[in-house]
Image 1 (cartoon, rainbow, N blue to C red):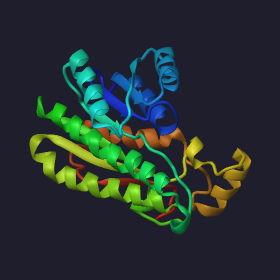
Image 2 (image 1 turned 90 degrees about the horizontal axis):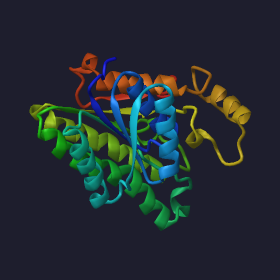
Image 3 (image 1 turned 90 degrees about the vertical axis):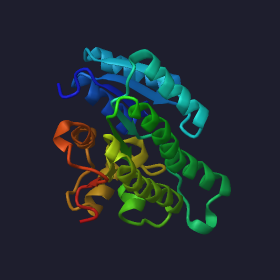
Length: 250
């Protein structure tokens, strides 16, 4: 129960990594706020948490809107009086070669993946400053932060920005007791890891050929990395980007 009594915010908590991370924190005693744009998947996350005797609340918010994020963090502070951990996971995946990417798709990707993390940190840091401590974990990606893949230019640019912003903010706020790091997942068992028209068997064969470990990552594995960063065990880790990718970037 490493997070007993802690208040945790997870964005993009309606599916995939965000949902798994929210459940992981709740299993270890945290009061979790699951945030995202659509209420229905968030409420499903809450149901899953409560089925495991955890505590969670669904709050809708668009991380590309400063007013929305301010409202989200303000509601958590109103209810709990503190914010101990924030996991900024909300994001989108856009495919297309650079000359072919629609400009609106480019803007949407940068807004969701990079600006969304900036706005989330901006308001989370302001809340954490009130009690002089806190942990922020930004979800970056092996793609962009650590390797390049043709056809994923917009996504790569947005995630490289997350990695750089994480390190800069980590240096700016560690003196105030706020510890900031990132995790960079490789292919994990999420809808985002599936290519259009691909079956799970197709994905398994593709990943086996691509990754040294020979398999897709499990949600438990990436959740364990996030929870370690949030725990006191990682108290000396500042401005780090933990790559969890089955050896893809080794």
